[in-house]
Amino acid sequence: MGDRDEACERLLDNIEDAINSLERGKDECEIHDWDLFPPEEIEELIETLREMAAKLNVKMTEMDEVETDE
Image 1 (spheres, one colour):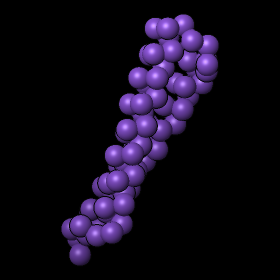
Image 2 (tube, rainbow, N blue to C red; image 1 turned 60 degrees about the vertical axis):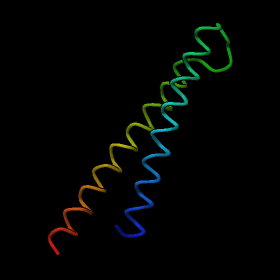
Image 3 (spheres, rainbow, N blue to C red; image 1 turned 180 degrees about the vertical axis):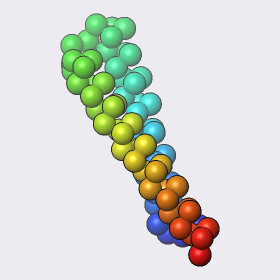
Image 4 (spheres, rainbow, N blue to C red; image 1 turned 45 degrees about the vertical axis):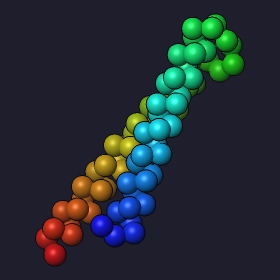
């Protein structure tokens, strides 16, 4: 696995960690009725991160296919 592959894997892991953290934070805010951020804003961030993860997965798959063809 090359440097680029490893960097992409780390980035994907970090994005997934961020999604999980935001989901837990959103749940905590809702449970305790904290009005720090509207749940819709947090959900928008989560959705953006999910889209980024999906795009990164596609790119990683494409890179794997190119490496396999070589």
